[in-house]
Length: 177
Image 1 (cartoon, rainbow, N blue to C red):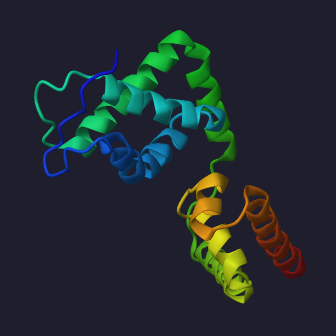
Image 2 (image 1 turned 90 degrees about the vertical axis):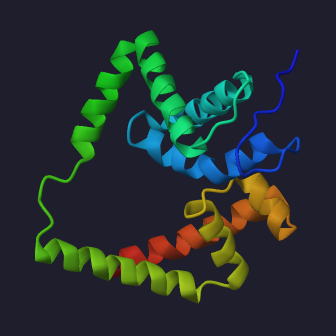
């Protein structure tokens, strides 16, 4: 038995409320979970947020949907760690291991700025479709399937474009070393 649609103030009362929420808040939730959970669990955690949102009673409209979704996200995160308490500690150890030891010195800022300039130069030199596919995937966090639909190509075509972009970035990175 499916739940009635969730009323959201300021949103159309169509059957696509969940899709609108996923499109609008999915990337932010992914960023939230990437900082707090192992990468292989991020998509599952995001899905759990939207499942809980969909299953909630639609008795009252939600005034601040973003705040509400992130409150659900915090609950999902805590619930997940209750089931596997070692998961949180493993994530903390991994996070500590990859955190930069040095502070942001002027030299470090300059190195980062130069690296970003190199990346932007490579992305601008790529063929437009290759650049578009890479940007949609890496910066807009779109899936290969979504990119394929948007660009009117196959998923395999998207994979090839992104691999081509990554190859060019690696070549540039290795040449600079």
